[in-house]
Image (cartoon, rainbow, N blue to C red; front, side):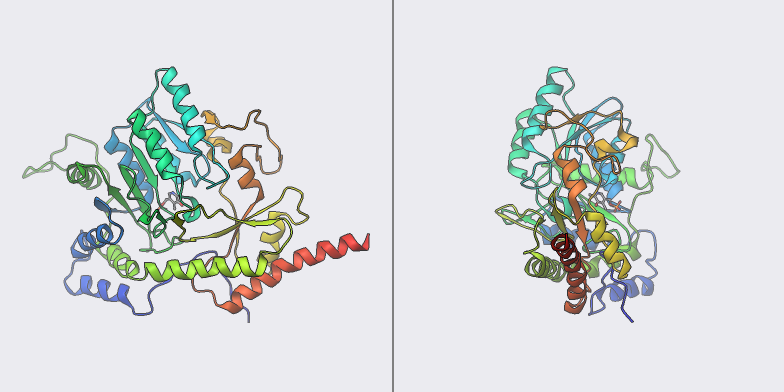
Length: 403
Ligand SMILES: *Cc1c(COP(=O)(O)O)cnc(C)c1O
């Protein structure tokens, strides 16, 4: 029987590192709270990727929330946020009652357009509403134009947050994503390149990282004051990672490089076996960057006979999971009241079914498909997927020649 193929599912180490760390936690009864795995996981991450201070939290979303709080984002503040992303990037802005202003992507990287960001700054500074923070995303592991964006943020003296939830292991000019911004965030959710079964990490890269990380630790452990009784002067959160979860994370960090290699091989396989299909293009690979290829994503030309949904349905019939590209935040009903800055002049809806518009992010959404990228796939699995996809092209070309 053919096995179900996942888009991207948990892949524990062959060596059983994760179990070893969990067992250690059991043996010492450090099940909760905190414990050695948590602090070691933070240290190991700092060393592995060269981050300032790492704080292990219950989710990547919690890490974004804490980054915003650490910057002091509050009611009425503006935060510039990449539109093409998962909603978890933007939601914490609203938790703090601030206002997201969404920025369009560029074709080169699919991530925040530095030119659109510059335009947003001009508009909002003119209005006397300089943003409190800028949040970029390295979508699917593709690096954003970090240098250009950091230069703009530096010029306006606005802190930069890197949502590196999908890009752990990707490098930009030889340095890991998540270590460039004042803050970086990582996710260990079940579908990410490594998983702790659920969890996240905040990376603080500022000069006063130690102090800021300490404050985040305080907020994320219910904001308890150092008193012999329960004393509180601020609202706290229960955001800290558990010692068991951290044990899985530590084991997974040991195989991060292996996972990146495998994910890159998957993309190479697709390029080799699908690269000749008419109207199909792969995600960009900006120069001086190395992508972790968390997901392999393709774009279909507007006039391509095969549509993204055709691929998704054909794979589904084979019990293979694929997904559309994230639908941009500026097109989401929940954010309909928010401003959107794009260099595409006249914005209008071009697809009534999905609600895609003619912005760059809208077009990437409309034409994109995330192909199965599970690191446990074999070459046979990949061949099965490529055969299914190639069949769609063969069908349309035979339909055309029969006309
Ligand atoms: C997964 C993801 C998050 C959220 O991480 P969680 O650990 O699931 O909270 C944030 N941003 C992006 C871009 C993601 O893909």
